[in-house]
Image 1: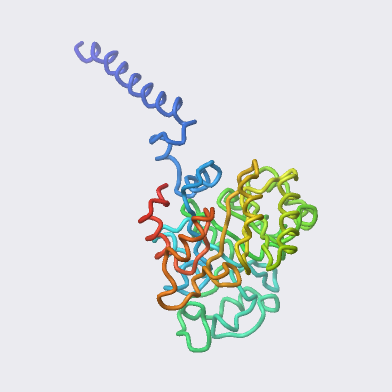
Image 2 (image 1 turned 30 degrees about the horizontal axis):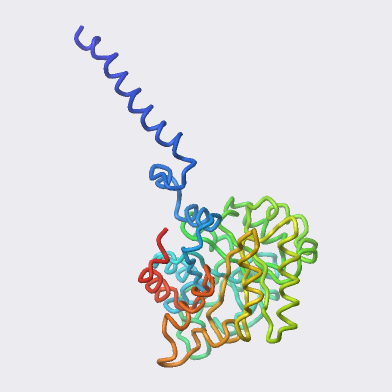
Length: 336
């Protein structure tokens, strides 16, 4: 009898607890700051939400060819290392084999990075798999490992829920690459990029453009600032055409081979779309006089990464993601 009397009380307590939990998430899930919702999000989802937000204090760290300083470039271990250190995005390069499989390769060749030779397009996946990758960025003197060339599917699976992915060499086969990504349901983690004006890229990408138009994929135009005022004005016209299109880009990758393109940056930062500025600090041809190629005491985090951040960069592609992460945390620009 006593037990029967307790049942309504117990049921009421359970109902109250459930109501409290549902109420928390139901009322607050629209709020990105909600802790209960944040716990449900994967890190990749949090990063995509940050990317889509108006926050321009957070600086994204993009690991160029993954973490090649400690593993072979464009390999699964290099991707996992970038994830472990806390990078926001891995940049990977894709090539297509003779029998139609996409694999990770910057050069489209095995020569530099492995103990085998040959162009990816002339080899089957099985033949590519026979190659043993060399440490780091490869080269004749780099040590051989037992690590093999991964497929795009394997690379994306390693990234699932953990990190954003930037795919270079996308223009070679937009339909094939987007098909692989869509079949895995991982499109919101992917940033695609390419060179060309809006009309050209929409035509070249073809049917898969619908995924970009729906904002499932992020598409980022690559533009060069040029070395002369005339070249800079051409780029400005190019950017304005993109901004006026049906797909105003959320970000631009800007290559700076000459002086700071003040007029171009002014156009970007005054755009109502407020696109993010991606800078490659890898070499001087991409980040003139403020790149990671500076020698000795000339290179400091402040003279390279800090210099570009002061000029509006919120996405930085680097060959030293660990050092960049350390610097950003020091200046409070990497709090997710």
